[in-house]
Picture (tube, rainbow, N blue to C red):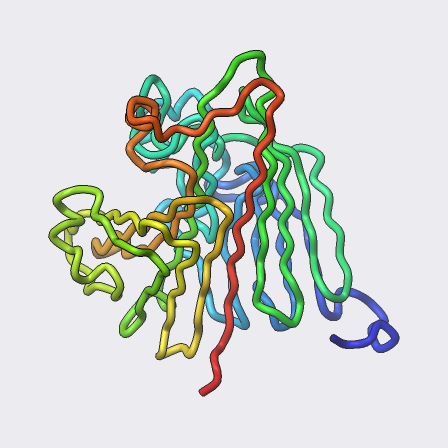
Length: 313
């Protein structure tokens, strides 16, 4: 690292600029733009649960951005089915799904829950010459989540630490999934995906038909269906782009790992999805004994890291 004596101002190596969006679908929403030398730059979205929007590593865009683009938070009550969540989803490097439902709309809870509609409170930004740290609290009843995001200068590493507490008086289903979204140019051409899974299981017939090609970037096709796979036993996933000479590795403390591929022309996305549950909705997970629960006052901690590097030539 560069010695502090050589740095008259921390902005020279790491900066964090808070703003309010002036126009467009996200008008009125808060944003924090973080730049770090030699690391992963982030656009944080405090009004979307302090999730991560656009992101770059040494000038290369990492995040997949949806057709809708960055938006302000939807009303939580609008997220009761499938379409509301999708219509309000701007993509971005990391979207948190939960905290009461993940996957299909189920038992009165919409697709992927209401976390994305929750604003962060008590946002704090700390900056040194080596890293930028952002912390906040997010309430998504019956839970409260404390989040800490760190991006490191001189190293392509982002770490997200979450602590979820059940603040209600009843035991509550507590599914969680981190939707890590990657688009072109990283997911493109000769890019390929690896994991340490002992088995890759398709979610449905569409995924079964594409099971042999889950690990490579597909050709875009008009009207193509999404493909979802579970990487059973996986603790990490690594996306490599030989053309860009770039590796992107996702690790997590959560016990399950899913993959979402959407090859439709005009969408063309990859998501790596660490989770503690399935993507089939709360009714399915409760019925099959797969749903994690938190008792009143009980807390659960989890983390996910996103690491980018350019391997030696």
